[in-house]
Every structure is written in structure tokens, then in C-alpha cells.
Length: 366
Image 1 (cartoon, rainbow, N blue to C red):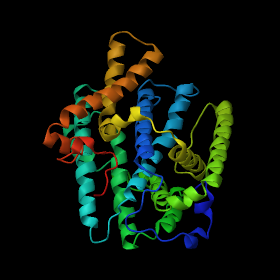
Image 2 (cartoon, rainbow, N blue to C red):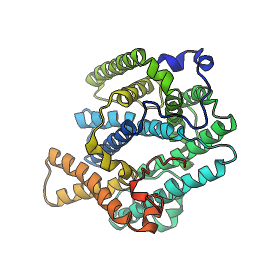
Image 3 (tube, rainbow, N blue to C red):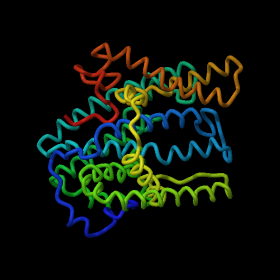
Image 4 (cartoon, rainbow, N blue to C red):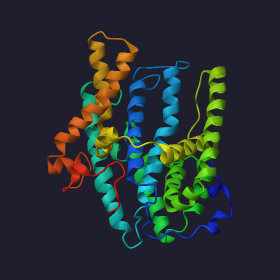
């Protein structure tokens, strides 16, 4: 369920005009989307610095950092899925061009994701870390979820399923697809373990919500005076209820695929999308978000290991150093590898020409 009247009203299917093939950006210009992209990747880095009870800083409930990490986990990947849907809807594929559309996604997401996962697995194996992989099992990295790379498998699956359905229906079935996806996400469906299908079901509604936000942007903006206060009220209500639960149980345990956290995620995303001020300082990081996503764990883990060897156990120092390492190491790698055409394509997912200036986490469909 989406916390806004324009998607929950049955009549909206009839009062909204069918979107054209190429959707105008309206007020949803590049700046807030790029800023959201950067802010979300910073959330991902911080989440992996804190880690799980058996990884990272090993924070367990009811420690506030455990609650913060769980809150980040509720929002960050759905936010990326909605950003992906927003960008997808700018120029969605036609049925005739669908094969080439998926080919570009494989080149710009699957190949660099597989390269990064192989690099990560090799380092983990040499250092005997948690994510070590036997050489005979390396093929599983391309098929089964591994570390944080599962999201790329889910995103490719979403592009395949939603992209084909969207193209086959002439880009007119986003709202029915959204209803079906929300129903599936809230069902206890057992799916095979390969290609992150279980996580894909949970992210499907968010991707389609991103599509709806883009295609019906003008309709939404015309009613933002009503929609945004409702979104704010829903977000605050969720925070209040969650805070009460945390005070009672010490836990923040809400899968983002369920309808209640989904209301919070979409509400917060709407508020950020329409009210987030543009920060020029974030702009240089926009084209590097995919690189940061792929390689940030090398920086976060490296900073943590180095601090432990130096005998530094200060929690604030670990947090700051981990986030800095998780951002700066991939940024340095991006600046270095983007100068090398083959590296830019296979390690970073960038185009051969003008690669360094293009965004890569959710590439355009051009």
C-alpha cells in the first residue's frame, strides 16, 4: 500500500492520462534524484560499517546503533529501487527494443557486479574472512545471492519482469502491476534461492512506485499540498509506533516488503524527493555511486581491520573511519580505473566515451 490518495483511489486508473513513451521530467529534475542517490549510498556504507550482530562492529539489540542499522535497512534498498524506477520511466523500452535494453543492463550492471564480487571473494578467501569462497564454487556468484551484490541480481530480475510487462502493455499497466506486486510482497511465498528471487519480490512494489511517481509527476505535484502532509503524518506515525515498540522490545524488526513499513518508506521518499534541498557538495559523488556500492565494503572492512591492529577500539572513531574508508577508497578506485577504457566498462559499468561523467548505479536506457 502506498501512503497517498492518488494511488490508493480506485478512480485514479481512469482520471490519469496514459503516459507517453518518453515521460517529461516535470519538477522531478536530475538534482533531487542525484542527491537522493548519494544520500542513500551513504546510508548503505554506514549500514555496513555497523554491520550485523556477527559482522562489522557486531552491535546487538538493544544498542542504539543496532536500531539505527535496522532502520537504514528498512529504507535504503527500497529507496534505490524507487530511484531505479524513476530513471527507468524516463525512457522505458519498447517491446521491439527490449532485448537490446536488457543487453545494456547486463553490460552495465551484471558484468561489473560479477567482477566486483570476484574481487571481493578473492580478498575474503585469501584473508580467511567470512565471505571466503572455494574456487570450485565461484560460479555460484553469478547465480546465487552473495554479500551485498544480491541487489544487482534483484534489479536485473526486476528490469526483466517489469520491463517486459511494461513494454508488452504499451506502458499503461503500471498501476495494476503495482497492485499485484504489493499483494505478492505481502504473501508468504517460498521461492528458489537463486538470483535473489525472494528479495526481488520485496523490491518489486518500490520499483513500480518509482515508475508511477515519474509518469504521473504533474498530477502528484498539482496535489502535493495534500499528498505531502499525508506523507509526513504517515512517516511520523510509523516513527512513533516503532519507537514505542523499540522501548518495549529493544528491536526494530520490520521487513520492508510488508505494508506497514512500506507506508513509511514511500512517505519518507516522497518527502525527500519533493522537499530535499539541493546540495552542491553531493554532486561530485553522483557519478560514483555505483562504484561506491560495488567496492565500499573493501574500505569499511579495511578501516576496521587497520584500527583493530592499531589497538583503537573507540566506537566513534570506528564509525567515522569506516564511513570515510567506504567512500574514499571506491572514489579513488573510480578516478583511477575510469581512465582505463576496459576497466571503466568491466569494473565500473561505465560507457567507453564520457564514462566518468555518467551515473552508473541506475543507468539511463539510452
